[in-house]
Image (cartoon, rainbow, N blue to C red):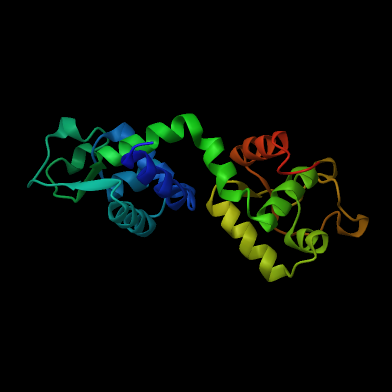
Length: 213
C-alpha cells in the first residue's frame, strides 16, 4: 500500500461519518466545477450546510477552490444560465478526492462495515432495525436496555451516516412493523428503520457473522 492509499483509508471514515459529504463529492465529480448554491439545488442539502461541508472537505484536502475572476461556462456543467456572469466561489475535486471516490465506488459497503464492526451498540441497533423493519426509539431502548437519549444519539449518528432513515408515514401499517403492541397500533411516533444502503451493509455484516441472526 502506497502513501496515498494510506491517507485515503484514513480519510474515508471522516467522509462517511456524514453521508452528505459523499453526496457533495459525487456531485462535484459529475459537475467538474461548481459553487454552493448550485450544489444546494442539485443535492437538496440546505445552503448553510453545503457551505460547511465544502469547508470541511477542503480542509481534508479532498476539494479545492478554483481560482480566477470567472470560469468558462463549459467548465461548470451545472451553472445556472442566469448566473453565468456572477462571481462565485467554485470548487473542484483534488486528485486525492478523485481517488477516494474511485475507491469508494468499489468498496463502499466494505468501508461502512469497517466503520461499525467494532461498535457493539451500532451493531445492536442495525440488527434490530432489520428485524423490526420500522420502530420508534422506545422500542429500541427496551430491547437494547439503553436510555432513550443513548438510543436517539446512536440512531441520529447512523442516520447521518446514511444507514438508517425515518419512515415518514404517520401511521405504520401493522404488517410493516413486527413488534407493534396492540395498544399502540395508531399511536403517532417517529419510526426508524434501515435505509437501502443500511440493508446492504447489514446483509454483509450478517454474511461475515459480525451480526448474528
